[in-house]
Amino acid sequence: MEKRPDKEGRIPPGQLLTKRFPVLHYGPVPAFDPETWTFIVWGEVEKPLRLTWQELDALPKTRVKMDVHCVTTWSKLDTEWEGISLKTLEDAGLVKLTPKARYVIQHAAFGFTANLPLEVFRAENFLMATSFNGQPLPPEHGAPLRGVCGAIPGRKDLKDVYLWKGAKWLTGLEFCEHDRPGFWERAGYHNEADVWLEERTA
Ligand SMILES: Nc1nc2c(c(=O)[nH]1)N[C@H]1C(S)=C(S)[C@@H](COP(=O)(O)O)O[C@H]1N2
Ligand SMILES: [Mo]
Image (tube, rainbow, N blue to C red; front, top):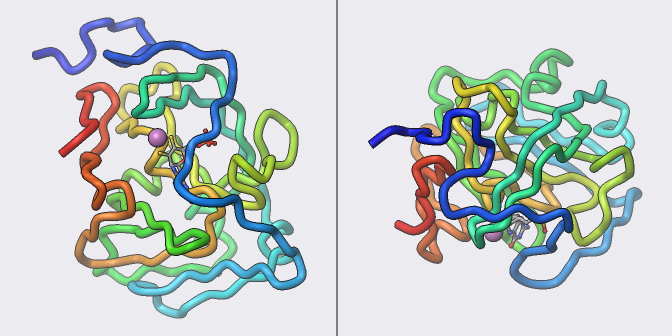
């Protein structure tokens, strides 16, 4: 079977377009207090990192325009995100991975987690976003920081995963040698989540 039968298409199989921006998550929306919020990085890194909101927000921002695809079948084209990436943290000398690092677990409020292979997390179509379409993230979409993953049109070299692989209310990153299923993966979602292969459930 061809990976992408509709070669010019931006709509993965089984998906429908929406102009709205649905809100989807399990549990309540956490409050954000910039005075007490911290972001931590640990695991397969040379030195654990802790950043305050002021420190994180002062880092140089990157912009990405992506099509996002939710496993519940809605897709939204041309969403614009601004934020930081693993490369931002590495370039700033804040994070240095050990040679053992092969997976990343995003940790978020209320114990939510999402797992990805390092190469997917590190790619240009994954961002830790602080803003959406030119505005600070709304609370229900993950303020102040969320993982977001999607498809950059024309970039068929990248792996595109469903939006559940981006954790809203992101508070930390754990780099691991071995993979561990995240919240939705333990609930029966597919570990790989490739939108073009319709890897929805395990
Ligand atoms: N913390 C947290 N992040 C989460 C989820 C969640 O339940 N908790 N759900 C995921 C799912 S299933 C989807 S589709 C997207 C939805 O993002 P949105 O509400 O901004 O559309 O968030 C993802 N990130
Ligand atoms: Mo979802």
